[in-house]
Structures are given as structure tokens and as C-alpha cells.
Image (cartoon, rainbow over all chains, first blue to last red):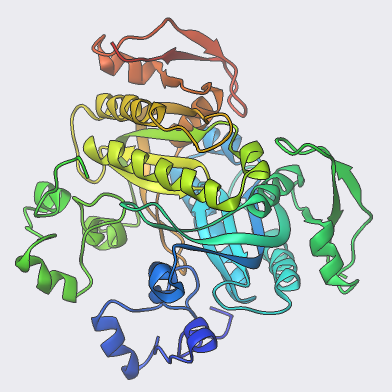
Length: 240
Length: 240
């Protein structure tokens, strides 16, 4: 993996000053009690992922966060006409490229579902510049993905949407507990992603303001999004 | 939980005759090495979920399966205008009711993402009548959910889509491994769910044929689904 690997859980250290060893011989006692690297981000631990209520004292809490959705354009049509091994191979590469790009910018991969990815920035490891990190991860995903060419057929592009704001983060479900982020910020990020064209990254006004011109945009456009009353101003960002 | 709990992993016993204790004192050695009840179904174990390649000798395999998608209608608009605690409470109840209904019919909850649920029937625990079990789980979800009334606002209905066929099941991603089902059967089930109205369960011809009249349908309709070339015949099923 190209991103740097931490020997202890970055979030447990940052938030609680508890050193949870993730790698090397010191990690053995932790692994014996089931505490290991999180699948959402290898620099975090399963305590961050599974014991939200015990760490934060409640099932849900409100945190500022940036949400990134990415999705393969034309996936359904492609999956109709393509051998299943090839579809799996494309998803395999897509998941790995997305995960690497997201982890390199301290985000967590909260969900993969089919050809869609949901990533969270600023939780549980916090960074003041989380909106910018999400934008950089998105640029990284597009850059990495542009180098992939499927064995047959037209290449599938990625559409990405990013929004930032206060979100509810924690566990949902009692019998079937899920670490999940909810709130209007998530729904809007998902709708923004739906409006992005193949190869495009669209960010909201709130994200764009936090980039402070460090990542350029090719203008802005007002878009009417499904389930959202007023039109939303979006900024397509790109590499310099 | 209303469904019966197994003391050993049902799939490891069925497929390999290996008794993996999930509950009681015999489960302690398993839990010490990190093998415990799966979050996808409490009657299965984490070996079923996380060690697909080791158990099946390859990353992916083709199995017959039934796929169920359920989704809360009007969730995005509701989440826009509702306090986040109330949204979380609604999702909490929705996740638990869906999980209980799916588990009671030997399905696994593969993914929750926002207001959407993806369940698989016939893997890893196989049943000849998996299509019927999925249909019964769907009826159970609708029945349970019809008893819920949110504290404020209009109640949200559930739309459900079910399709059955050969699917590719296994692990996707190398660095970021995910237990996932892929293939046209998954995409079509998702599109069928998109065509279902609030409170409705739509099943494909293939599912309907396997119900053999044991669950009634109120007619059939041809629907043009996004990303699918030809119109698809769908059957709305309901309780007798």
C-alpha cells in the first residue's frame, strides 16, 4: 500500500491518548482480545469501529464531517453484458484504488455497496482540513482510475460528490449494529454524486469555501437535485 | 429476538460438518481466536463472512441465490426536515425489523447503506426454497413496518424488490476486503426495488415461478427499468 502505516491506532491516540498497537509484537495481546486494524482504515482499530457507545457514552453524536460518495458510471449496463469474472475484477480494482486514496487522506471507507463507495473524513481521526483532504482523495481516485483500462469494452468513469457539515455518527440498530453516518449532509453528498458526470468531481459551496482556492474549479452550476427543494450550487474541481 | 438462535454456526455445519460453537461455554475458545457470531446473521459465524477464500479455495464462486433490496420511501425528504435524533430512531427501528425478518428466514443482511438494505438468501446457509424464504421475509418486513408510526410527520413506507438467479459471491478488494454479491441478479433486484411503490413488494418472473401460487400476486405489470434494455414483467405479492 502506498500510504504510510501507523503502528498504533491514530484515533485512539488522538482522542484518548491510549496507544493501541496495530502492528508488530506489541499488537499480539490486542489481537487476542479481538482488537485489530479496522477494515475501514488500517491506521484505526476495531474499537473505533465497533465500540462507539462505550467510547463516546452514547449511541450517536453530532460531529463536523466531510462525506464523499463515488460511483462507477454505466456499471449496471456493463454488468448486464460482461462476464462475471471481469465485473468482479473491475470492482476489485475500484474498491482498492478508492480505499488507498481515501486512507492516504485519513478518511474511512464506511461502506461499499455494488459500485458505490461512501467515505467519511474527520471521524474518528480528526483533521482541521478534512474538506480539503476529501477533495484531494477524490482527485486521487480520478487520477488512479484514469490509468485503468478494462480488458474489453468502454472504460467506466467515476462520478464523485462531496459535501461537508454537521452529521450524526454512531451505531444504528440494536440487534444488527452498524457504524453509520446519517443526516442531511450524507443525503446531499449522495445526490451531488448522482449529478456528477463520468470523470467529474462535484463539491458543494461549503466544501468549495474550505478549499480557499487551493484546488481550482471550472466554474459553477445550479443543479436541481432529487428530493432537495431548492437548486444547489455545485463546483466541478480538477487538478491544477 | 423472536427468531430461534442456533448454538453452532448453521452454515459451517451444513457445508463442512464443522461444529463452531456460537453461544455458551463451548464458544469461548472460538471467541478467543476471533471466531464469533456473524453480524450478517447471528446463526452464522465470522468464518463464513471473512474467510471466503480459505473456505472455498477462491475469491469468488457462482451460486444460485435470491437477492432482496428494501428501501424507505421518502427518506431523503424526511431527513431534510426532521431532527437527526428522530431520523436515527427511524433507521434504528428499520434496521432491526429488517434484520429480524431476514434472519428468521435464513437470509443474511449483506449491507445497510442509509435507508437501503441488501439481503442474500441461499448463501452461506442453503435452502431449496430460498426464493420463497425471501418473499416471506419481505412480507414480514412490510407487516412489522406497518405497525411503526413515527413520532411526527407522515409514516414512511418500504419498497421491496426481489430477484433470483446465479450470482457471484465472495470477496472483493485486496487491501479493503468486502464480502459481496455481484452480477446481473443483484442489479436487477435493485432496479425492481426502485420500481416498487411505498408498501409494495415486487418480484421477478423467476421468483414468482418458484412461489408456485403459495403467495398470491395482484396481477402483473411490464416495467421499463433504468439500465435494463427490455421491459421486465413484475409481480406485486401480498399476504393471503
